[in-house]
Image (cartoon, rainbow, N blue to C red; front, side):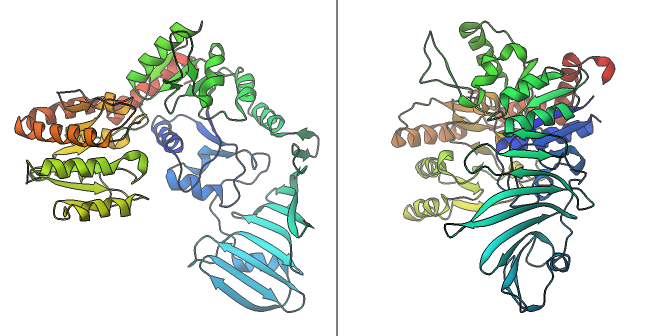
Length: 506
């Protein structure tokens, strides 16, 4: 049995989908299940191995669509500048280096090579550009060998890509991609020609030789969904719902507007063996909607996209009246609301402190708010940190996000015994906060009146301390967190796969 997980792309700043996949990859390793994570986007700016390894995939778990048809393995870059220059040839005259970009000029002809290094302190080349008489003619891409070349021709004073060639280890071409200038690409193999990426995806799926002992998990379907659905019928098919799955404002008693990213999957739910969501609340909502708006009644299971290995108890006494939040400092996280709420609550509880972990574009705005209210002594921006042993130093966790599909920081906070205060919004807050038991859920409205939000948060912060309920709420957070221990998630995955795939093949 093999579990094939299908996605589009990833980068250095990957989304929650990729991190959820990386977590799942670790789960499957612990369960000794054969798993592959398939990426179908053209990824050439970086060696894909550097991106996948960065978030926790093992090399042998990764399949990249475009080198699947070659014998080159997923591996880190080891080709050196000298290796590249040996391919190019010529009499070198000088070098110019700027960070990770090295340009080598040659005296015998009007040409130069630009090497894009893995790191400015290392002599390893991810890709190289070859320019002759001021014209870009080729780009080569490297891991432990050259795996791809792009060929260019001048047109209207620009370099136009007309062909990509992917290679085998011995340097022989495996196949070509012919760029059809605005039309579908042509994939030229030794024994066949394919027109358009859907045809390439279908050919790829057929090479997997799927059977009923295999499971295909679809994480993203844009541009590939129909082909994957058709070919995955040879195996078992699961679909992961990573975000809010419908538009509440455009839904009424008679009609539901599914999220565009899930519309195809939900419309064809009869071909899906299993839908996977990360919270029980989303499972409940989705089941009700399938029953009300469709004739489908698919199997839906809750499997969290993260876990904690153990509950974290403080090594020393928690700092009294200490509040914490942790997230990207992005506008949608609304950390500014929290800052203003703490400033308001501080008037009644002058012992309060608030530490903010994370970085992002809102940093300067937050600093300005803090400075304008002369709150530097009790509100601080802490930047990035490894938080696993930090949460337990604090007493309360605050969140102001108005949309949180799961919320890894919320899970980590309750596993360290922190009560939470956040909006009553799907799905993370409703999963990790039991109102009045381990924190407070604040009613949310679409108009988001800042003064009302500030007042509501400040009141709940003060209420929590003035009613002296910290200890009881702390124990309730630990109790909720027990459902998110790693062993519990391992058990859930194992049981789910056994239910979907014949036990005899596991």
